[in-house]
Structures are given as structure tokens and as C-alpha cells.
Length: 106
Image 1 (cartoon, rainbow, N blue to C red):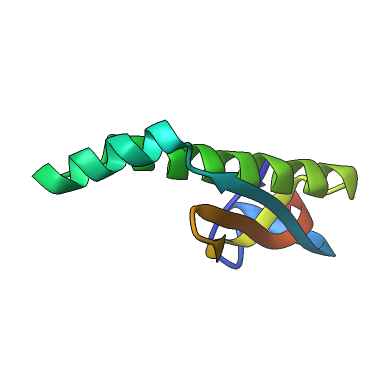
Image 2: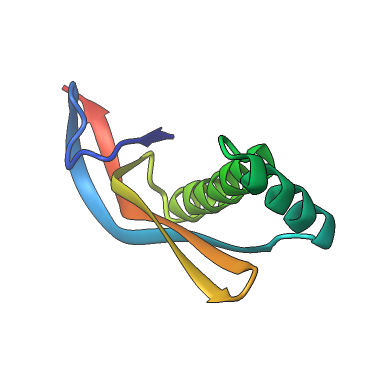
């Protein structure tokens, strides 16, 4: 599956637009993760426990988006974006979305 944030793919021609595809995940931080994050925040710098949480959430949303595109017959996703929102304290939604297309080499 080819995925890009651009509106086209260099070296490929879009032969069919299949529409919007999305992948969503909702994640929460554990009590232990929050404690470790608070301790790390006290000392400043990179907070690895939250970086890992964010990376895992984005990967999961991305993988769901790719599955959605494949189910619709796409071989590429263009204009891919991420969005995240807090649903409530400690619970975050991560959305990956884009336009599913069928491409062929030029």
C-alpha cells in the first residue's frame, strides 16, 4: 500500500478515486504510565512513556486506515493526515484519514 500526504504520487497516475478512508483508535494512559510521566515531567525533557503511547496510537490508527483502503480495493492512499482529540481526561482518540485511490505506474 502506497501512502502519502501529497495529493498525488510521483511516477503514478490515479485511475480511480474510491473516497475517504479512516482508521481510528482510542487509547488511555495507565495509572503507572501517568505516574512515570509525572515524574519525567518534573525533571523535564523527553517523556518516553508518552512518546511510546502516541507512536502506538498513530500506528494502530494508520494500520486500520490501510485495512479500510484495501477492503475498498485501493492500492494507495493520498492526502493522508492524522488528527487527535481528548475524549476525556486521560483518554485520547487518534484518527488517520485520507483518500483511497487506485494508481498505476506512468
